[in-house]
Image (cartoon, rainbow, N blue to C red; front, side, top):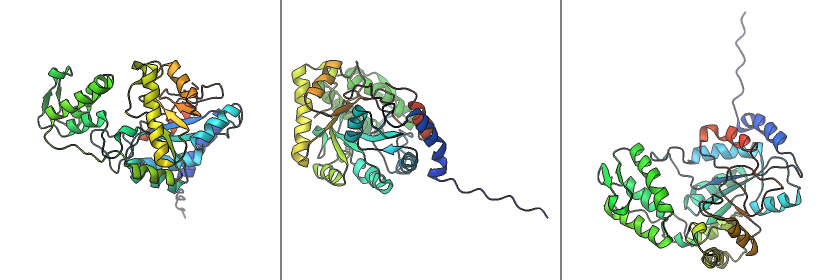
Length: 332
C-alpha cells in the first residue's frame, strides 16, 4: 500500500524568518560588534496604488512586520542610539521609522505595528499638519488627475510629458519631482501650485497628512515622535541661521503639541553631502538631539556618527527580507 506523502506544515512568519534570523545574528551579534538596521517608510496605503505599485500596502506591511518581529530585536530609536553609543545593543537590533507625517501612518500602519508589538518613530514636518500638502504630493496628485493625455510644462522649465497611462504618469512624476525638489523653498511651492493649475481641474486632497490631534494620538500609543524640520527644505542650500530656525520651529511646535521632548531628528531627503552637510549634522548635535538619521543606505555600527545614522529602504516587498539581511553587510 502506498502511503500519501505528508502534507508540509504551512509557512508562517516564524518558519519563513528563521534562516534570516540566523544570518542576521551572524552579521550582527550582541555588544560592541552589533549592527543596527533602521528601516525607513513614508506611507502604508490600504491598497496598491497603480502609480506606485511597490509602495507599502496594509497587506505587504503586515507581512513584513511579522517577519521583522521574528528575525530582529526591534527597539525604540532613542534607546537604540544610546545603546549603540554604549556598545550594548542586542543581537539583530533594528528600528522602524516613518518620514513626513502622513495620516495613514496612524490609520493604517500604527494598528499593524501594535498588533505585532513593535515600536516605531515618526518624523513630522510640521508645516503640513492640519490640512497642508507637501509639494511632492501636489505634483503627484495633480498628475494623477491630469485632464489631458499629454502635459506641457515648458513654461515652468519642466518639459513635456506623456501622462496617458498610470505607467506614463509614474515616469513623468519621476522626471519632474527631482527638478522641483531642489528649487528654493518658496519657489518650490509656487511651481508645484502652478503645475497643478495647468494640469488638473479636480481639487487635490487635503487630508493626506496628519492633523495635530492625530500626532497626539500616535504619541499616546507609545510611538516616538521626531523632528523633520518645519517645511521640509533641502538644508544643504540654506545658511546656518535658517537651518537652525527650520529645525527649531519644527521641534518647538511638536514639543508644545505633545508636552514631551523631541529627541531624534531626520534630515529632509537625507542624502549626506547633497541634501545636508556635515556642519549641519554638527548643528543638530549641538541643538541637543540624541541622534539623527539620513537616507544613506547601510547599517550603523558603534563607529557610526550618531547624528548621521544610515537607513534601509524596503523598496521591493517581494525581496524584503533578503534585502534587509544583505543590508547588514554594508556598515556605513
